[in-house]
Image (cartoon, rainbow, N blue to C red; front, side):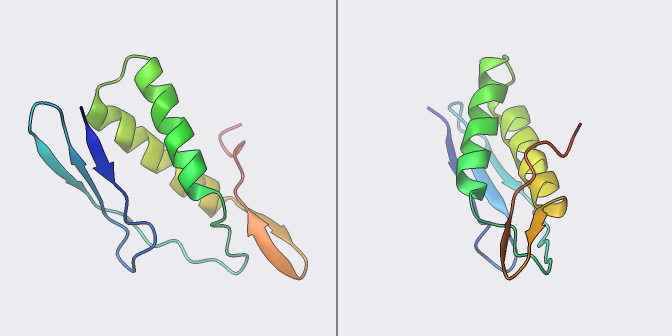
Length: 94
């Protein structure tokens, strides 16, 4: 059993991974501030990206790292909406 605790809601959004073999990893994060506040749905995007990476056969550390990078990109390339919070851009890699 692997355990990941995300810190995206913190000023320093570091994540923590404890693997099934007992290895502990801190994954440093970067606070991505933007005018649109494209943060709604980050937890769902992270868990989906993590599940997809694991299904593709990545180990826990690689899968968490990939999911974290995917969500960071989706925030960075978020879609703005006039007068409202923006949204993640799940297609930012295309």
